[in-house]
Image (cartoon, rainbow, N blue to C red):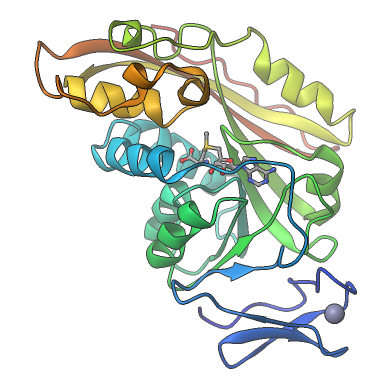
Amino acid sequence: MSAVPRPLLLCPVCASPLEEVGQSLACARGHRFDAARQGYFNLLTGRGSPFEGDSVEMVDARDRFLGSGAYAPLRSAVVDAVLQHSGSPGVVLDAGAGTGYYLEGLVGRSPGCFPVALDISKIALRRAARRLPGGISIVWDVWRPLPLADGSVDVLLNVFAPRNAEEFVRVLAPGGCLVVVTPRPGHLSGLEAVGPLLSVPAHKADDVLASFGGALVETAREDLDYVLSLPRGLARSALVMGPAARHAPAEGRSGGKADGAGAPLEVAARFTVQVLARGGRSSGRADGTDG
Ligand SMILES: C[S@@+](CC[C@H](N)C(=O)[O-])C[C@H]1O[C@@H](n2cnc3c(N)ncnc32)[C@H](O)[C@@H]1O
Ligand SMILES: [Zn+2]
């Protein structure tokens, strides 16, 4: 972890500022959180959460899939969106960061930023912490008040992950932006050949915008569509890393016997990348390619 900018982190027990003390974070009232051996901080200590983070199986699958470069065009689009809005972002929070893939891409192009990976899955954050040695990875439940100071985040990323609109607005700095990625109907179609898929509801991006009730306005929206040619093993990873994995029968979840067998599958990637900011900016909405 490199020096944490201040004020940024708040004690989850008493809401006083958290400071770095050696390998720990501590507040003036004596609450202290030690770094896990793998480098992340679990601020949810002693508090359990009803929400389930991604499992080892899902995180392994996601790491394999992202490592193949299948979502590299999406990562570029996310980083472009960030840099177009904020030429040189300071603190960048990824809420539901998973393995830190998108933050890693941003750090690669904007080395001066301070990445904060937040996720409820320790398993995912072990990898994020490795990928983001110059930032901080914190285990937290996005549905609780975030352990971050008001207006402390210059850029907030939210990629296929839950959104707490009220808290996102609170932590976003004036002039900051939120970049949200959602799937569109037909996303991952083609994967049915390896297991059941959950359908993607229409108008997700509109729902995202509406969920902010006017506190944030949309300054850009781009649809990004392309076709992936996935070897069978990777196609199974795509299935296992997503929400369908929780509902799929065991056969659809295994990386199984037939890995690698059969022709690659043509699979659709269909995303929307949205940029939201506090009111007052002009809309730069750009509907992108749809094919
Ligand atoms: C579909 S994954 C996306 C991960 C990452 N953004 C990516 O695209 O690679 C959703 C992530 O949200 C996390 N998550 C789910 N519920 C959460 C919660 N209540 N608080 C924080 N993270 C949560 C999961 O652990 C998982 O890492
Ligand atoms: Zn405290």
